[in-house]
Amino acid sequence: MIVRTLDECRNSERRVVAETWESVRMLLKDDNMGFSFHITTIYENTQTHIHYKNHLESVYCVSGEGEIEIVGGETYPIKPGTLYILDQHDEHYLRAYKDTPMVMACVFNPPITGQEVHDDNGVYPLID
Ligand code: 9YT
Image 1 (cartoon, rainbow, N blue to C red):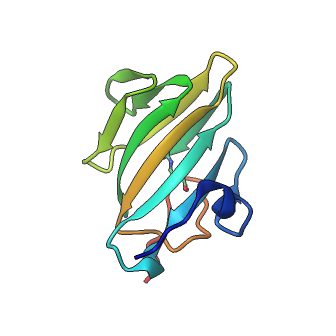
Image 2: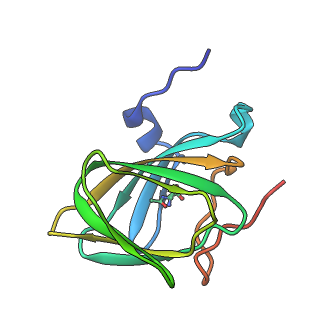
């Protein structure tokens, strides 16, 4: 069994910082679980373009408020308790507002390796 805390992961290279978000990757590909698990903070009053062409992702909002706009589709509010499931590799805009960051628990399949940040198209490469 493996046990980790958010605090110890945050104070390690598991914490990755980008322009509009930061993420603590608590469980990664090398744990051999078939998925990765992240606690991601979306900075307040930001918009992030994301398109996980190579991954499936599900995201649960722990705190904060915002919305997700599916490109060419609907916009859904996000608040604590909301789970969104990107089962179609949906391209989207993720927005956090109300001057409060959104804290999200995220699961990726396949798992990411650890140091990925979005490319210009909001995509993570698939790393084998
Ligand atoms: C909310 C969201 O899409 N999070 C993705 C994971 C996070 N950006 C990360 O760990 O890369």
